[in-house]
Amino acid sequence: MASIRASIRQFVILAGGKGTRLGAHAAHAPKPMMQISPDTVFLDYIIDNAARQGFSDIIIVAGHLGAQIHERYHHAACRQANISVFIEPEARGTGGALTFIAEHLADEFIVTNGDTFFDFNLRALAARLEEAPALDAVMALREVDDVGRYGAVECDASGLILRFCEKDESRLGQSGTINGGAYALRRRVLDLIEGYPVSIETDLFPRLTARQSIATLRGGGYFIDIGLPETLTRAREVLPQRRRPVLFLDRDGVLNHDVHYLHAAKDWQWIDGAIDTIRAANDAGVAVVVVTNQAGIGRGKYRECDLLALHGWLGEVLHARGAFIDALYYSPYHPEAGEGPYRVMRPFDRKPSPVMLQRALRQHKLDGARALFVGDQDSDAGAADACGVPFLRYASGNLHDLVTAHSQWAVMCDD
Image (tube, rainbow, N blue to C red; front, side, top):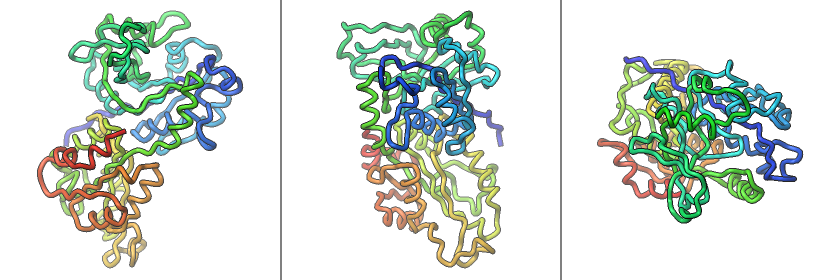
């Protein structure tokens, strides 16, 4: 089995801005700490989006009123991610914020602004940097219908940035791409910083453009910047109500060829098109949730730690391909053959029970009306039916072609 390069795991949020355009809204709280709902602030959405994509080391660089950010997040956790907060003693710009935490940075990392949420496949952004050692940075681009309202980004056919364009009223009503505010960077770019204040966007990126070492990836996912009172109001209206569509996938026989009691990476054989299916869902903003019966644990064929190790390896393979699984649910019980604590006469979460699907819908705020379950067994069909989710039975062929041709796929991707 070939070794897999460890993928980027570090995610940096720059949260030091004063929010002067917000006026009284930001008089007593940092801009990223704007209340969105009674239970959430804006930063919560950025952090959760990174954690669900497998970034396990989240660093927040705070500044103005940073003690509030430190109190809420320092040494906290989100999903499987640990969070750390560092407070700048003085504002040195977005580039200066990175030099402030330079000793804590990995060789490669993702960085975003704390006042911008972009529903983007960050794993694809990381993979684009990882696969091209000559690149210093990769920028997420947002496709917009009216590029004249923003500063546009122009690229060549390979995705390398050619130039940054200022706002131009002559381009009002024209479609194009703008800076989405999320970047994959190599720590070596900090060597280009001389003096403060320094901006990543206006000082560092033009130098990388001249060196032809900054590439791009495009996306059309939900985007909002809460820098203005009207956009903050819009965030409060939209974000608490957003429910991500979901693609449920059985594991054995759908993602991998069904080897009896599979529990080791050396025995894993991908179904044709399985990785492409996951990546397509990630790119479209569709959550990917694996739901699998694993009675081999209950039967004593392998241990739960073996299963978790296999799924950890699975995550690394997907990350290297710019893909990820949002959540994975499994039931280790069996009513007759289970041993010890795994012998449960009526396991309430074992398919065809819908419990694993229902848990995912509630725990991850998913939209059951925009869902599809792909499985290969009657138990999968039963779980889908009990949950009220459309079902696609997989038997053979390219999984990606079958899933994306299903009528429900267009419903799921319509955001």
